[in-house]
Image (cartoon, rainbow, N blue to C red; front, top):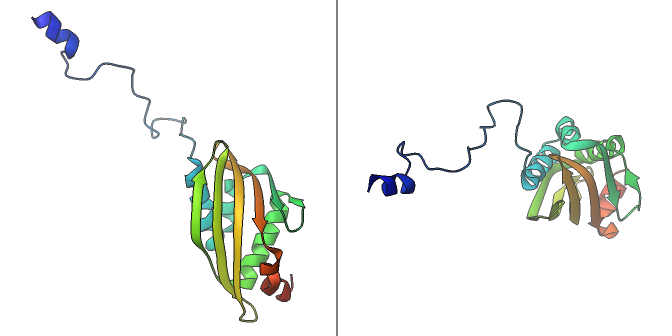
Length: 157
């Protein structure tokens, strides 16, 4: 009967169910970027030397901890370090990138490569554990082998 058919499919031909959420272009309710999207933007910005973009990807209260120093850096301190790296390492790039989403953000393993000021190759294997909240990075814990920092230290760090 028509009544039975009407239950199976609405007359309008449109499926029944909850109203779809508004498109991101319809107002201020923009979706929060996925943690892996945030990671991609971060490493693209560092690789291209765009520290202003890095500053926007970090939350204002970000803390960046390094196992080599045991020190937590503020946003400003980490941007100064990254500025030094970008200035002193040419051909800066991330290779052998392995990245996974976590409950609180993402984990990335990579090899940072480039050439130091003296022409010495830079090759630093690292693992970063990153917390992402509301589309911004709030904490980074970076682990690397201090012996791999030799070319950077010789460059005047």
